[in-house]
Image 1 (tube, rainbow, N blue to C red):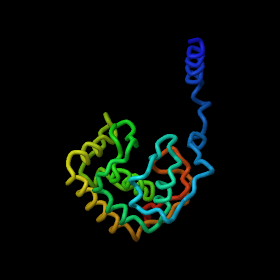
Image 2: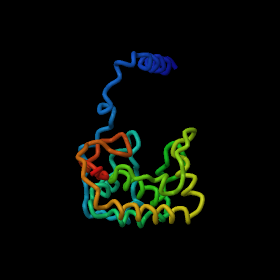
Image 3: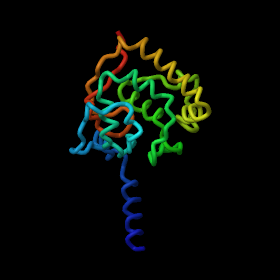
Length: 190
């Protein structure tokens, strides 16, 4: 009981520090473990075997990062956007439920390509009271909604494919991780 009390007091003390002592955001990012190995032979059919989706500290899934780093799998990932196979014990933070292969394929795509307008592609809006819940409500309502996302994202990708440029970066787009991919694609403004 005393230890718990001391931890609580030290936690309060840490939060009471002046805001000008907040470390740079790059310091707050979780580092990838040295042991992560990117495997180019991993295919999109292995999404169902992913154990962690990047969110705060979940930065070490070899399958996830291998699929992110591969350059030629975008259309294969888009094909997975209707696969409702559930990943066991891989939970969606803040919204609940378990990820599906379709959800993870979208996270991988969003890690590969900056600025995919997911909510626009499904005709939904960001709701300030719940954040990204409009996406989750939409795709979980009917399988046809996932088909709509798949169709619209494929069209969007094919329209922008030739304008995508590689941006070197160590930062992940979807989590507080350093990305082993070394960057991501972004639509060129030119």
